[in-house]
Length: 131
Image (cartoon, rainbow, N blue to C red; front, side, top):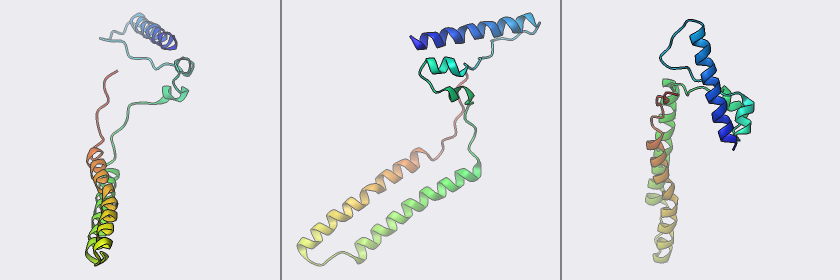
C-alpha cells in the first residue's frame, strides 16, 4: 500500500511538472523526474534522507590509486607471511608437521577472499542509469 501511494505521488508530481513546463511556453521531450519529498519516502518505508541523494559521482584518481595500492599491499603481506611461515617455522616432527600444515592452510584461506574482493572492486566507477 505505501509503495502505491509513492508511485501515485510521483506520477502526480511528474504530470504537474510537465504541465507547468508547457504552460510556461517551454517544451521538452520528456518531463524531468521530480524527487519525492521525505514524507512520501517515509510512508513507503524508505529513509527520509534518501530524497537528498543524487547519482554517484566518479571516484577520484588519487583515491582509486590508494585503494589499489592498499589491496595489493594486503595480498603481498599475506603471501610474504605465508612464505615465511612455510620456510622458517615448520616443525620437523611427523605429527607436528601435519598439524602445522593444517594451521598454514587455515591461515591461507583469507588469501582467496582478498584476491576476490580486490578483483571485484578494482573499478567501481559506473554511469548511473537514466531516471
